Image (tube, rainbow, N blue to C red; front, side, top):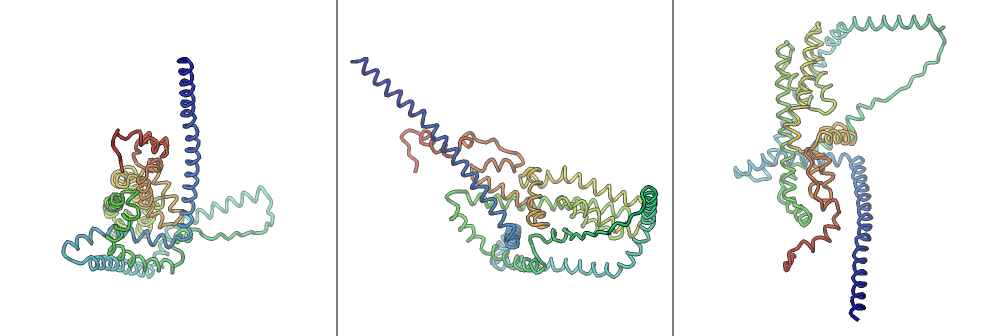
Length: 408
């Protein structure tokens, strides 16, 4: 009898062991299926958001610009509040001051543009006289090449075919904004939306905590977002000021007329992704073309701006901007390509903070830690429990609790 009892107990133990061994395989298959479904849903949601951002670009750009400006100007509103000024009055004064500053800048630029238009015939004749020798050489080269071709092959009458291609640059510049009326509507709505966001900051924080407070740390996310935007703007101001000062000194040293505005504009334009170097070169070189006839100043201007671009891209931007937004150079480049394709020049200007915003969103949830590491400047090691999935963590939590202690 004892032998039979032991045998039956052993058989039951083996069946229990087999059941325990079979359980992980079934659960692992369900985990794999759930992870694949989650990946497909993530791709679907990302595609829908991209399509919405593309076709509703004017709405998205308006909201993004207003939120960006509201976060940027909020410290000024807080300082005015400390002086016992109501928040609505402080926000209105800040918004009106910004509109006035933009208006004065536009008036100054309009005056410069009108004076330039009046002097344009003189500039055009000067440019034509400067490039006339080069044009004659090119024409002589074309004529000599044509005569050589006629000597080798007899002339044949070939019907002329002209293909008219529409320029894509104007379309790219206004992509996301739409027509001129769309740009005017965005410019008119952004100040009002910024004012309302500044006035209702506390209410928006309460709503965000009530909506996401049980799943994420909304207060910490808002704090990180504010620090990122302020750091991005401060870093660009530091780098742009250094480049503008260096460009202005070089232009003043070689005797370029209007060295101060040209140097400031060229230094700030050098911050633009991809197009910055071309724009920063074109402005002072165009001004020098109206003044100098020797190649020395052109060489100095070109070498200076290229050198500043290389120094800023490899030393200044990683130190003062990349560390503040905490995204890597590859992620920033891919973000610039994506947002530039989506919203044109507006996307290029907002690409870095928008990519950093996506990283902040990925930091909120542990399942998105892989995306956060792909975008991060210094990726963090992935916890082991993340590799096994969230369902494995949920099954392991009861075994990790101390004996006799219950969690709510």
